[in-house]
Every structure is written in structure tokens, then in C-alpha cells.
Length: 242
Image 1 (tube, rainbow, N blue to C red):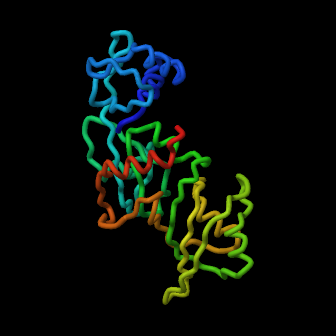
Image 2: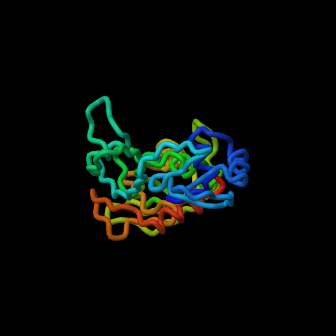
Image 3: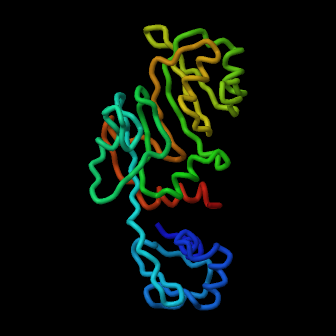
């Protein structure tokens, strides 16, 4: 993934971004042997050789990005001390370590991103970027107008009041469960389940169907696919201030 040179230099610990811009303008930075003087220049640190004052920056690991349709029964961690199956068991990537972007609890299924791009991961999870996630749930209990008003406006949880959320009720199942869609931008632990618990309801099944612009279209349960370059660029666009 291409990034601004000053960001790459800063991440390598050479200088701050502002100082790196000055280095570039002064002609102290080369990309594959060619002097670059425009601070806005972008490069892929994993595929080119970048040098400052003739000293090469370490070549970065090739970044990879995957979209997984997580089934139930897997925990969203790189490893589990209790020996449970993890989402990494579903993506047999060699030579590089990848990590989930956030978590889905063991009994929640659906869209989960995994990558070795720590910068993007941190930004996507930061609440100030308002990256939206959508879930479909089957919920037991009485979803009264007052309960829906609380869910949409914010409910009090043990770790504070939730931000406003979009909540749509699509009907009921033959077992009398409410079919609900919830869209939010926070990412607290078990947040959707706890929100419904706070209004006296119980989530019986939960699936994340969307993360930012990404959906599960064409990805079967338990399967995965790499993100396209365009999809990665769009994720970076959402958090372009990083």
C-alpha cells in the first residue's frame, strides 16, 4: 500500500513527519536511487528501496489484508491459552503474522478483517474516525417503542453511555424472535449484546454483515478472500488523517 514518504520515514523512527518533509525538500531522500523532493510523494515501503542520507530504511514486511466470514465457535485472537479454535485457523497464511481488526465474540459470526497493517488497524478501531459496522440479530424480548428509542439514542452500560445507533426492526421469525439490524461506529466488547440486555432483551444470534464499505457478498461462512487494492485504498481514505 502506497503512503506518503514522510509517514514511512517517521514510522521507521528516523524523524518526525514534519522533519521528514524538510529532509525530502532538501533532497536527502531517494526512492530506488532517485532523489525525491516533493513531500507529498507516495511509495510502497514493502516494494521499493527508500534511503535517507544514503542509508537504506529497513524493507517493510509486505502488507496483507483479508476479509473472513467468521463462523461461530472461533475466537478472534491470534492465539488462545485455553486451546480454543481461533480465526487464524481459517486463514493458513505463511511467513507473515496477521491479526484481527477488533473482535467478534465466540458465538458471533460474520465479517472480520485480518491484516498485519498495524497502523490501519489502530485507525479503523479508533472511535474518532466513525467507521460503521452493521449487524443482523435475532432478539428475544419485547422491543417496545421506548426500548428502541433508548437503543437509537444511547443506553447506559457499565463502561458508559453508548453513542447513537441506527436500529431497524424487520419483523419476527416463526419462533417469535425479532429480526433487527444495528449499525454503530463504536467497538466495545460484546456491545450489541449488552445494548439489548440493557433494555430487557436477549440476543439469540448475531452476525456482522458490513464493515465500512465491505460486505460478505460472495464469501461463504468459514471462507475468506484478500481485499482488493481499491478496497484497501478506500479504508485508508476513511482514516486519511493518520
